[in-house]
Amino acid sequence: MRIIGISCVRDEDDIIESFVRHNLVYLDKLYVINNLSKDKTASILNSLANEGLAVEMWESTSCSNQQDRAISMAVKKMAMLEPAADFAVLLDADEFIAAADRKSFIEDLEKIQPNGYGVMPWKTYIPVEDDLENLTPSVPATSRMTHRRITEGYQMYKSVIPKALFGKARVRPGSHVVERLDGGICPRFLLSTPLAHFPIRSANQLIAKIILFNHARMLKKDARPKESFHWAEMAASIRARNFHITTDEVRAYALSYSVRSEDEKPTGFVFDPLPSHRSVVIKYLSPGDESIIHRFDRYITRLQENNHIVPMVNTEFEKKEFHLIGAVRESIKQSRRWAKRRLGLSRKA
Image 1 (spheres, rainbow, N blue to C red):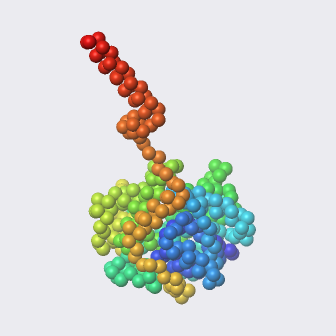
Image 2 (cartoon, rainbow, N blue to C red):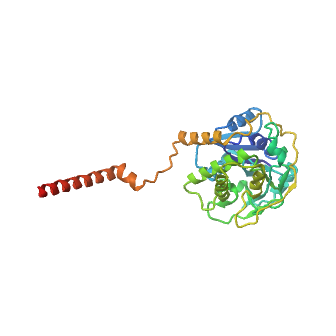
Image 3 (cartoon, helix red, strand yellow):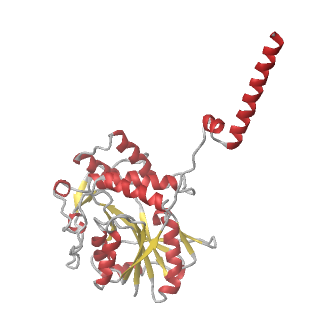
């Protein structure tokens, strides 16, 4: 059986090497769409490919987080690029396949029928005290994934697409749902293999992830009302704290990440480390816990380089003073007022 992975990433140099090395234990090849990364993500991916790992990087230039379109297009391309592939696993850079080994993962994938798709349940991991106080770039992220939420609050899943649907289905935002292009029924098959999810890893990473990704979400013109709902809520909360997040608050955010406001927030966590793989050894170090200022500076640079201009809503003042037609109209009005004043003066004389 041939299993491929597809991912779309941006500025994930603190976790991208761990992501590639760990998931290639289960996958035959990993296709990574690099979406305008300005950190070391691209150079790390190139180094991993040059090392001989089965990872291939593609470039995407959308600033508005069109991840679902990029993933859907990549799945469509697999029909030609990967004719021998049996399944495509859709992953984010903070997601790790948590099967005991490749054999058990294959046995799980065999549950998926050609007319449907598989879903892997999230298990969200949270940082413990040692992770937050002793961040070391040379330590694999998987070594720090030791504690997860006891409950998910709101259970979410990631999709696995069988070969029969390559080019015949679209992926919804977040890769949580797959739909047939012809409108037919696309049943989903629940897999027993969990997907270990490590979205919150430090205070600075949390702030950058939520604030910048929420800006990208807002720039997305066709975003659905509840798409990435947790980003907007968390961004508002971080701003209310004046961008200062304590160690306890980092854990609190991790516990409530992606949980809807109407659902009960998880409060407890349990020791449940990932399967250990000797191949996950970090060789290409990232700068470490980078500040939000550097990340925001790179984000603005991306917008400038891609001429991604947010439309300006003109106030009445701008319409009158700066808009061409408004300026002409205002000039005519002023001329009429001047003429009336002159005529009034002439009658008095």
